[in-house]
Amino acid sequence: MSNQQLTTDKKLFIVFEGIDSSGKTTQAKLLKKHFLATEQQAVISPEPSNGIIGNLIRQALKQRIVFNRDPKLFDEQMAYLFAADRHDHLYNDIDGVFKLIANNYHVISTRYYFSSLAYNCETVEKFEFVKRLNNRFPNPDLTIYLQIPIEVSLLRLQERSVQEVYETKAKLTKVSEQYQQIFADYDGLILNLDGTQDPQQIHQQIINCLQTIVTKNK
Ligand code: TMP
Image (cartoon, rainbow, N blue to C red):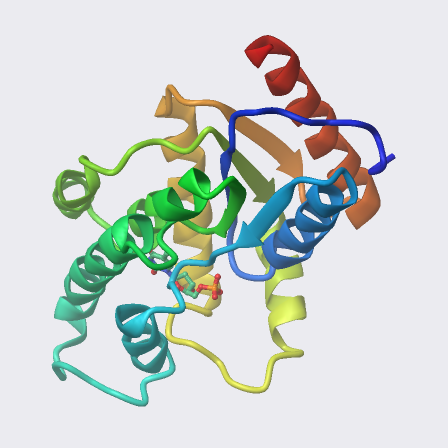
């Protein structure tokens, strides 16, 4: 289980992806706990980030601020904001991902540029635009995609007190389809998991995968 020895000198940048309520945060917490239990430093660093642009984005997702009343422009505005936030998240020299890795921390991010490709564009043309906006961001060491049916996501979202703009059946259906496409074309390291399984079972599959990476790196 999670007290298996898994240590590596290389600090990893690990990303969780999936539609809303797919269990990303739960798994990120279990993974952080695992690293700490094996005496390795680890932090959870989400996107939208905890920085100033990330906070602005959270207000926009809740519609507490509106930049433009034309809904057709919304995705594009969000794509620009998320790209700016991502740059800050990766490269700021206080608690940016690379700063943390240099300081000997594994960094676990819930969401990364895959979310921009899945959420912030709905046509092929817009997809290419979002891809260009993000094409200089490096791939993580490992991406874990937690797949759940839309119905499960909607059921879990009912428990939240505030609904965000992207949390609708139509949007999540589209997002789910886009994720399939993105990861089918992705050439980085990806672990696809059934997010409806018991959280401990999912966690164990992640640890097994990391074990393989660590062994290869040795
Ligand atoms: P969260 O539910 O993981 O906190 O994410 C908040 C929302 O942000 C979620 O609906 C997905 C959305 N999002 C984008 O639209 N584009 C992005 O690039 C990222 C990172 C998140």
